[in-house]
Image (cartoon, rainbow, N blue to C red; front, side):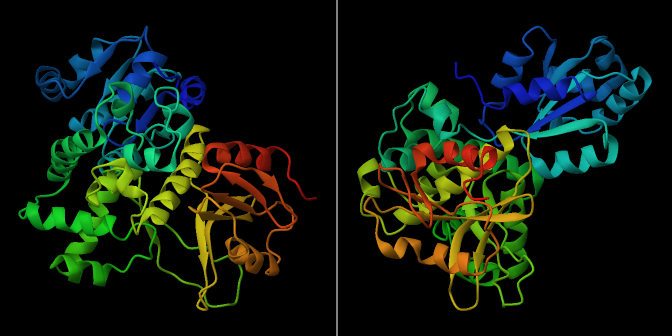
Length: 395
């Protein structure tokens, strides 16, 4: 079993709040995490029809089974139960009572905000980080990590990624989305999701996306919201700061799991990624998600943006520290070139970040400290983020 990096924060949060709520994609490891961290705590899976019926028909009696609290898995299946949990929490007035998990952030967020505001820690568990995945799989090449992605079952059970991701898309994504919204045209929706994969790492234009998918702008926006709520796609917001220069306002589109994006692009073998035209975009997706997992696994919020102005100057990732933007450029090439630093050099001229170094993440193996940037690879990227946070290179 892989020791999840987020486990220590989960334990700490449980001592500070009456309820801990853990959300994340299907098969990101939520059940395994809570059953490991709270192995001596009562457990109930609300996906089980009998358990769910008991909780729906007699919520007070259901909760009375657990005088010391419990882990309640897949809470989105019984949203009304949360109100009864609130009553129990307020009556007992103590921490460490319930652990809730769920896979649909839209439903869970609405329910929690209405009933458990101020009473629960909200934690997001994403699929394995690269460090976690490599405990089970070597993933020594860029192609291997882009192809396999990071859903735990692929690495734990050694399932061929194409098979596992096809099953994932058909049985989990479509089921979750059907629970969230009535989808009448599944073939159009599947085409829409594949078109999203074709735009990975690119500016999101909902109108064009809808046109290409053959659906209205309104439908395209609704479907994007559903994909975000089900932890399939992630919209990276643009950086604005206090700049007077005209900046791009559209977000960039990524997938929470790069392997799923590769599967939706029709990639069936690892070696197909060597010359694939979107190899660089997928690599960028993987690096952005490593930064997001680093934040979430430490119990922190999303602090990520990207920079692009109307003249085409761009930095792939902005990591905000104490309102100071740290620019991070991402290049899939294995050999460093001077133009890799063009976006960073432009951003440095804006003099928005003189306390921290710029960072270049590339597809090679070397790590260097250059005069204008720290150079690292994806395998040591999180170590670089730790170093920047703990000991800024420039003062």
